[in-house]
Structures are given as C-alpha cells and as structure tokens.
Length: 452
Image (cartoon, rainbow, N blue to C red):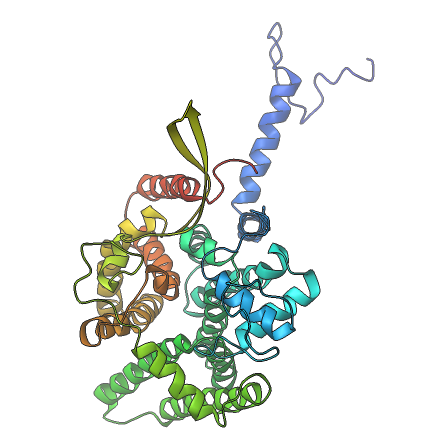
C-alpha cells in the first residue's frame, strides 16, 4: 500500500465505503468536516461573543476617516470646541471661530467630553481618526456593559449575546459609535454604572455616573433609573414585611451622594481651568437654562418638516435626520437622471428594532409584573427613565427634541426584543427569521453604500 492509500484506515472519510462504491471526493469531504467544526465552534459562546465583538468593531472602524476632512452632524460643534481647547485653528465662519483659546466654548455641556476628544486629537491628529476613536471605544464599552447587565440580572449567556448583537447592529447606535459627538461618551459610563448597581457596588456605580454627568447632563436619567429600581425594592419590601430595608435606603443615599459629590467637585475643577464660571452651581444653572430655552414651535408645520421631532415619533422611526450624505449624480447632458447616495449617515434606528418595540415592551412589561423577571424589570425601568422625561418636557415646555435623544433607550429596547424572542415560547424559526431580517435592515442602513 502506498503512502496515499488510506482505504480501510479507521476514521478516514472513505474507510466505510462498500466494494465498488465511488468514494466521495476528498475536497467535498474536507469542506463538510470544516463546516461542521465551524458550526460547532459558533455554538460555543466563548467563540461566538468574541466574533460578534470583532464584527461590531470592524463596522465601527472601517473607513473611519471618510469622507476625508468632513465633519459629520454635530461634530461641527464638538470637534471645533476641542480645537479651541487645544489652541488649534478654527476656520472663519465655522462654529466657535474666534473663541478664546483654551476655554471651552460649548458650555451648554460640561467640559469632560470635549477634553476627551481633544486628547484623542492630540494623539491621533486633527483628522477622522482623532475625532472619532473616543466614540469607537465608548461604543464597544457600551456593548460590553450590556452583556454584563444581562448576566448580572441572572439571564443566560446566549440571551446576553443576542442582546449585544441587536445593540451592535442598530443603525443609530452604530453611527454614534463612530462619530465624534458626546452621545456615546455619556452612554458608556451610564451603562457601566447600571451594571455596577445591579452588582450592588454602589460607590463604583456613583463614580461612573459622575463621569457620565461630566460629559452630558442627560446622564441624570441613568441615576433616575437606578433610584427607581431601589424605590420599587423598598416598596416591595414594605408590602411583604411591613418594614423598610435599611440596606436599600443606604444604597440610594450612597449612589446619590457619590455621583452628585464627584460631579460637583469634577465640574468645579474643570471649570476652574476651562471656563469663567465662578462655581459649578453657576454652570449648572446655565446648562439648565440653555436647555429650557430650546423650544420647538407649537405648530411644526407638518410632521418631520424639520430635523426636530416629538418623542412619541421616535419609536416608529419617524423624523430621521440626514447627518451626512454624499450623492453620485448621473447626468444626460444637462439633465439629472439619478442621484444615488454613496455615503448616507442617518439618525435612524434599525427598522426591525423599531418595529418590534410595541410588542417587545408589552411582553417585557407583563413578564416583569407577573413573573418578577429581573432583567425585564430593568429594561422597562431603564427605558422609562430615559424616555418619559422627554415626553413630559415636550408636552409641558415644548422642549425641542431629536430622534438621537432615543439613543440612551436603545440598550433597553435591544434587551426587551431579545427577551420577547427567547422567553415568549415563539417557534425557533420566528427568532431566526427576525435575526436574518435584522441583518438585512442593518445592511440597508449601513452608512457606506459603495466602497470608498
């Protein structure tokens, strides 16, 4: 028998062939074996989670500096603010041109977020990489935090992985995870603080909430969610035992004192160097007053006539915002035949995620109420704390709002949709079909329509 003759060797793919049978081609057999191994490895969460995170990272960094030199959406505010902090040139006519060098010109938000952008630009340069790396890091941190939240709430690894996948491949989350704005920089520490609160690490939770508050005041809604969970625990304890658990009260006081104390101290330290405010209270008063004055016209002249939108339109993916669009124009003579976008950054949710919101929260709310499901309760409370204040502000104060304010709610939506698919006894093919459709929705909204 030659060295190539392996017929009859135990375990070889053609060892069991009958006399006269035509052996299966070696290449087809090898492909089948490799395919089986790949599928087996994907069934292992220790392999699936890293692959998911690698895919999410790739979607966030590919063509990160394209289109060259173009600021996307509100980058025109925050990147120019970072340039002023660094003493770099801001072109005449651009936002904050002529502002005092070294002082934060964007004082409607605390300075920390702009300082993070400035540090990145100092390291990587005044380009797309330098502008956007902080949001990429924050976006990946947010994905990790959601995984930890699901696990800390007592759910399975696979439910955590699917929730991360829905968040990772939502369009609004993707876009803000790769542009140089404050929105992902505030969301990441909020979610880390929420995870630490679930672990009952109250001091650390307060620290991360303070960091988030030093980026943007909307982090207060994360604190509201944590305090709401504690309040529900206190009420439940009273109803069950007619006594208040001291540990829950102490936890609430701890997280408030730590987050508020560090926020005030941090704002004072930052303002002393990067602003002219005499005290953090003065700066807070300015930020609150600035926000209160951002009012939408009572008559919006039709639905989605401008970029602003009402909070009750967000769950239906209405009033999407064009952040940046580059069209390829085809002409025949002087006549424009077609305009096809080659780059299309949109403020919009994955359409499948938006479409599932009503049913997902109806089921998740029922599960939290009847089944005392810890993760379902977290999702409902987090969504409510980060969404309902905007509804109130829109009705009472006519506060101008935009669809990207919904970003802080999306982690809860991703979790709620995952709970619906995996805990409602739906047939497996329904979940698989939804996941496939979700991937198609992600591809349809991916900002780069052609390879740059």
